[in-house]
Amino acid sequence: MSAGGAFGGARGYQPKPPEKGVFPLDHFGECTPEKEAYMQCLKESKNDAEKCKEKAQKYLECRMSKSLMAQQNLEELGFGKGTEKGTEKS
Image (cartoon, rainbow, N blue to C red; front, side):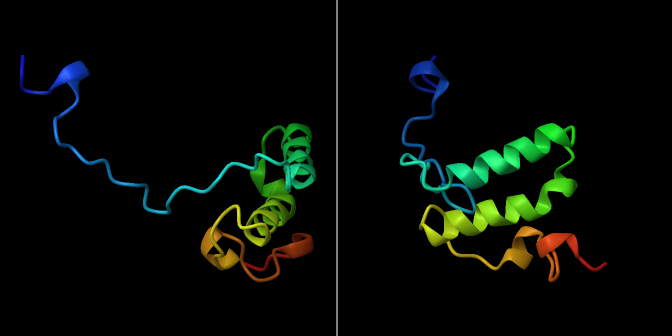
């Protein structure tokens, strides 16, 4: 039973971080209003995230502005030009 080490873990195995990395939790509630607005929208739309895209964008913008996640182009996160105010063009 020495193949995997204690509790099935491989000895000497070094875990790799996720591709996007880990971002800190919002311990101080800096983006709580944006998060709550998004969660309320999901609740009201029966979890249809497409209907809450503007609120999701505002939440991510808040996280980026407070250094709670890495700055990233919103288009790379699925928000096309014109997404703001529900005017995304296809």
